[in-house]
Image (cartoon, rainbow, N blue to C red; front, side, top):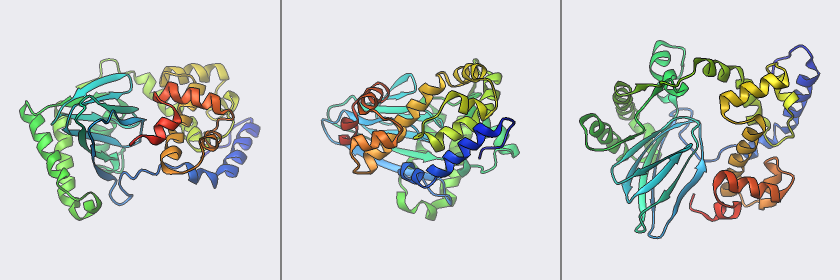
Length: 313
């Protein structure tokens, strides 16, 4: 929601633009289900045949993820870091982290993933539990071990608990809600007990994330529109120079780079969930030039839109 601020001409323009696009935005929503409002957690079980290279291309989601390799060897990249996972290894992927994976074993691979919102553990982050046990992890102040193996007592306990969850029927998780809750709380406790403080955590940067949140929310709702720096800066409000400096400092990229990357990520859903032509998808995602769309897509995702659509994503 956009609040009226002094100099409301810009704000009113943004409000009008949001209203015009409101109905069309439904077409851009993420189609992959990671649970429901009633039980915001999902279990995905996937296997890939011999000869598979791309397991999944670069993507992100608001939920956290625990991925356990069940077959083969997988190279999984989270943001800028690459991890090699073998059978039985588990990786924790925090909320909003870009990640992709490819198979390193020509004989195929497989994994299961528990994808869950923090709301499954605690809906209100302002409670004592939310403030002490969830928010520090979401904000990056507290770091969970990225990869764990079955070579330690507490790591094995986590993997055994995850295996119990994997035995459940993915489409009937609500029937196992109590068992699922107890396992997830036990997993969270073990991770929390072995978490480390982030030595490079920047409290000022965390504050800036809150300051620019209205901008990120607006981009999420209006990424297909033409957006200017002055419009975004007016949401906070700040001068354009101050806004660009704080945004880059906080998000590690310029506002325009962030918008381009966000548009590409949203176009990925249209590529895999609709039969629309690639040129139409480029336009719906905010690109007026398909050649430029292809160029940006390749630089962000690592393949062309056509290759992405034809993959087993």
